[in-house]
Length: 313
Image (cartoon, rainbow, N blue to C red):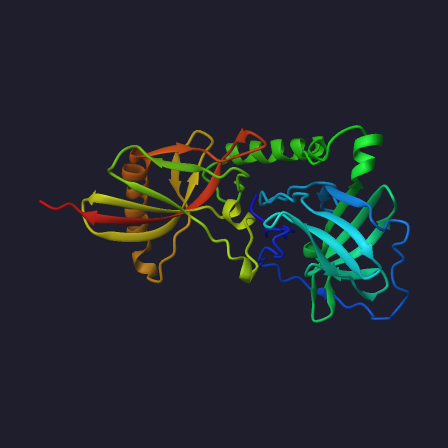
């Protein structure tokens, strides 16, 4: 099933770009008393769950909400958050907007629960002082105090962060549908581990492309949701260059998917050419590992840019 991608909340201080354009709900800005963090000041919390309101950490596009934040309230107006790049706890101003809505680390949150053992934040998408009333604000983050994890639950954050049983059942249902209709791009979904292409020999070169652009809010999630490859065939029958989508089934078989042409009268001709490139060149010159999620192979879609260079005598 293909669906609009959900937001990623990675700690790279960025947000995954989303094409979601649903309506938004405006909230009144009525100042209230600031948050009293006295009882939780100095406690270090690790995020152990990040889920949609339906309790799942996956959506129908294959996007996975992954817990990754580590935070600590330093004072009434300062929050420390772990920066994995610099490997330090970095300070951020805690801005109180209204009611239980706060901002820090360039993110907006509704604080739903604050206790010595746990925190629950609802991540909010705010544009022009309006909170989006759609999937972009449908993410709940649960934190446990490190002491609570170690001494009361007697476990580790890594174990608590694993996908739930409900996630597994959901993905199994998604996989069953994708593998039943592997030639239908509306039935497949992005693999958490994308399809992997490797050259069989020097008759083709393969480069995995990355779309990550943190300055413009495109995080690492983009690369597994929309995997892209650049392929060059140095000894082709003619010079050509095309970009198109390919479906990769659970066994690694390739099928032409979406392609664009602004000349409708030549669409069928273009389709035959791209189908031929897919079945003759790509299928035979590549070693293909299908995409998978939770260790289960399934049909998925990738984008390829294929360049052919005519053989020289």
